[in-house]
Image (cartoon, rainbow, N blue to C red; front, side):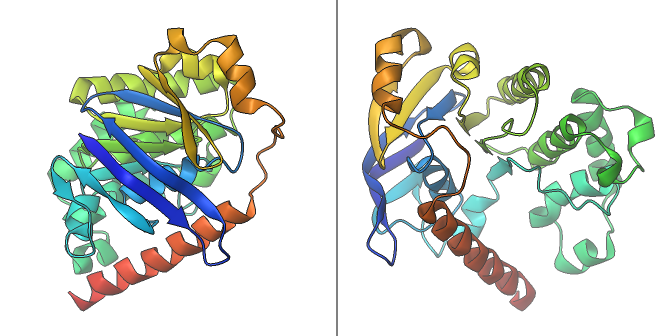
Length: 274
């Protein structure tokens, strides 16, 4: 279970991204977070894997409170599927998938690309699961279509057998048919492993189709929490009233990205020091 206890995030310029978020997400649930750009969806997701540190409150994963002391250990239980795939385009498909177990592999083996036969076999099985053929294994990621790249991203996310998968706008750059296929893949794969999924989306129809539960956010506050059937057209209008329908990064999202980068650098430095 993921537990948010009075979680808030205020940026250095005084703007508030999250305001007193209290929320419980049970194991195995496919929870979709909706809201206009700048609502705090990405910030909420990134507090779970420690890429964004709350200003107040705390987050618990299965009873463990997320802190700097246990952040690295808890982060290994969380995987992410990114909006822009976040693959190394010059690497092969198999190499990209294998990066999903870097946290479980010693630094020197990771740098040399030495992975165990069991990891390589698992990568092949996951790629087959997401619909890619053996001929794709040695192709560069740059040679794949957007939908194929996101399939690689899903396989990579499940390499570590995560308890939680964070999917931040995973289909924003894909066409409707491929978007539906990708969300079905995430949901089916998570269901087989009883993995909890938090997924931010802009596509209302897809959210209603795939979510077990919908969280509506606006201005850093939860304004709706219920089932897709309870998310009426009236609630939809209230959630998006006056909002701009675009995917441009807001200043808060930029701050989020900068903080994520700083935390990634710190995390890498800790690995090297270890």
